[in-house]
Length: 116
Image 1: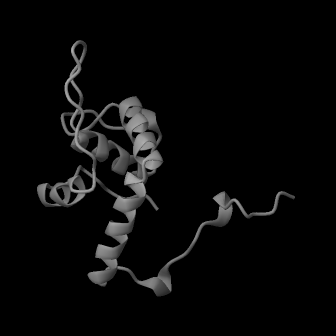
Image 2: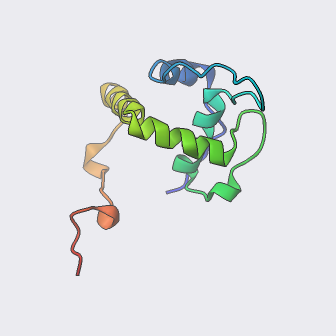
């Protein structure tokens, strides 16, 4: 189900940034790195809204879709993404913000589904 997301609040960002690796140093030439907050906002926007990459909004709080996608891949590969998800799920559970009786699982992407 699509939602609404306009970027992380300062409080949310302070929680998330703790789990991210150190931002890279500026390269010698070319464009400077976009802040991780912009990249994370873009990744979260796609996850929450469920939009295509070409529908990502533009503005100072958003990262480029290709850059954000590349960083998501890095964070998945180094375990950062799993740590963030686990901590967010744990925080939501402690806050009693999850109604497990209404939870569901989408099995359409399961690696164990029948190959027909």
